[in-house]
Image (cartoon, rainbow, N blue to C red):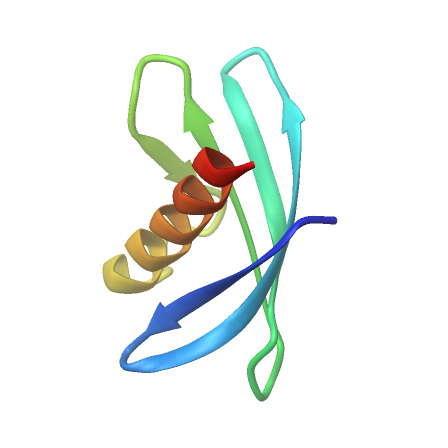
Length: 76
């Protein structure tokens, strides 16, 4: 499980994620090591953009997670 860091609201957390290829794009899921631990899951869509399983996630948190994973994937 790859690990990276993620800044959310000025705090930096460890983020662990797994990715799987799906028909719609690449499905990412994992956890953010905060108190309490937060889970996340989203699809990076083939046509661009992303779609979170829980649309109630605050937009700034969604963007922070996506940006952290995108940065980690570019380095890998």
